[in-house]
Image 1 (cartoon, rainbow, N blue to C red):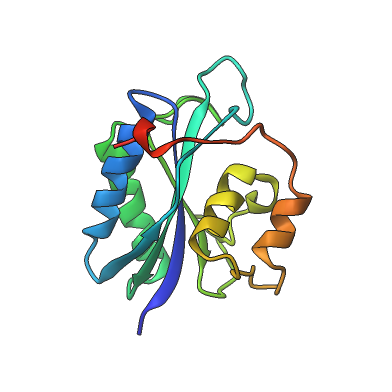
Image 2: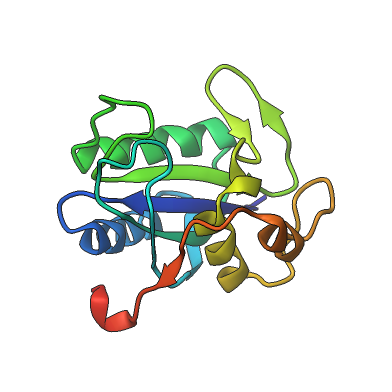
Length: 165
């Protein structure tokens, strides 16, 4: 049995768009997982400390037979391969991979919260989800389109395809 999983991608260090493009390829190669689609990339202001470069964000839609924690382990391994260091909360990073949605599951434990805890407040995550599946809804039934309209503005800017590999 496979589950639709939606992964948010972000980077603001070391050629962010190239980091995301490489991560998309690595996500597509995960075992027991198929890449359904990838969103456009967007630039936005950082959340938290403003003394860092703008972020490039996007999302992918996967079908996977991995369970949420197995998928999280794979996401964190990809982050580590990209040199991810957790030096400051909401600080700069080479790659951030967030499990935004996992089917219609709601999960909260010491390692993982699904849907992502801040999803409703992040236009840079909601807009790429809309790109992937315009009729997507949160597990509580709220359409992603509604959440996007109610989301704070983070000066989101769609990047032209020429700006990323």
